[in-house]
Length: 329
Image (cartoon, rainbow, N blue to C red; front, side, top):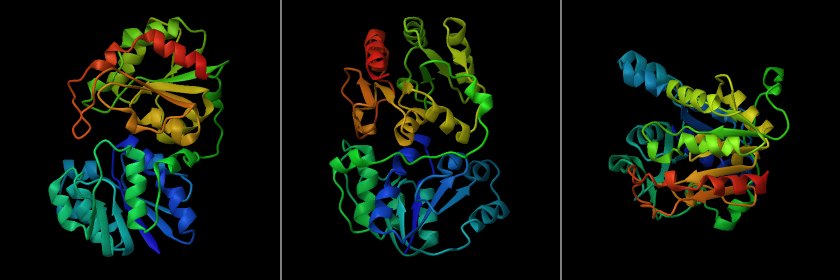
């Protein structure tokens, strides 16, 4: 059986969605699984357990420089391969079109949670979920129902680390790790300032703890923020890195602490202890355990449409964050 998963972006959802692979492999060990993803995020899936193929589509370039020739070039990567079952875990029109294009027959997708209603026109089977259900359960349940097996919320607790990185010489990074090392992920998805914890509170946390804090960054703005924090604390800024090296660094660390953003979810997916600070989003974005802790603000989350003006994350007491860091590390 040939199965295609379509989840183009974002980083955190791709990571959480990839937790489905080990369950598929357990039920259908002979299945061939292909993941179709935006090339901007695709490298995060390299070396992932139980994933046979990754097709990376350069949608960003196609959007900026659209032409028939460019569109044909990107869609040629799909090689008109036809899959027995296609599961759209994205719910946007572009993902639905790709899903229909590569399907022999069956295309499964979200019903009420489709991000663009038109996408549902291309599904042969639509599955409903509640907005407040755990996101990782939602991805796993969508796939389970598509492939005719069952899964429960309790099954999430049995998910084993599944992200991996290339085996190579990492000595250029090992020099940054001295004593107990904590990676801070202070950034957030573009336009999601409501997910960001205040920089002055990060500085307080760093200066009140004796650990080795390492700051990661992706954009120019994130680098500027990291420089500000480092200049007012004993934290160290890591160099710009690709997804492969980011996975290694997070796996190498004793703990990752940060906002509700891709790198903190890597911690869970690669087996590193993690603490996620939440304001406008809720604890249903993760699987909580003794090694993966959520610190949630007091605000009530609007699950069907997150409120980007909910800045309650700023109210989380830095002393509470320190308490959890000391307990988990």
